[in-house]
Image 1 (cartoon, helix red, strand yellow):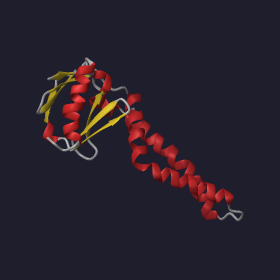
Image 2: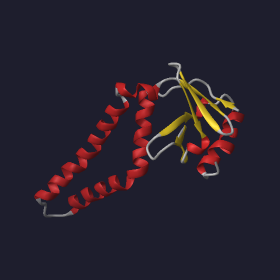
Image 3: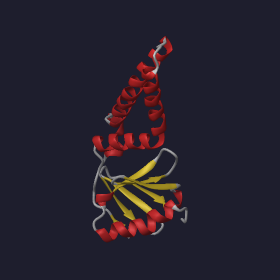
Length: 159
């Protein structure tokens, strides 16, 4: 059994995690936009359509950041940002939240696991995941046990 320390996400951490997840999935699109802008600047004759594309290339990332910023800093995400701790057993993860609520998920409910920076993301569905910070583990032994048993089993669908 592994017990984590009480820890919560800050809005800034949540925002950075969302941006990181977006860039991991859609990096190619942003590179494509950048390359098209470079091509447009290298072409001698400019058209109205290309001017629109250049404006779009600068507005799209800005609007994307604004959208994710508003989402991460929204008051409606209070439950995601609450302080919580986890008790991880061989077959389930119990999460205790500071408002007194508790949830239990069987390890077989997780469909995917990945580590991004200092976070472990345990996916329940394509866009829903349980976030466990790397620094939440009480000891290096608990972290290693989690990685070798729970994280490995979920990642390789051996639950």
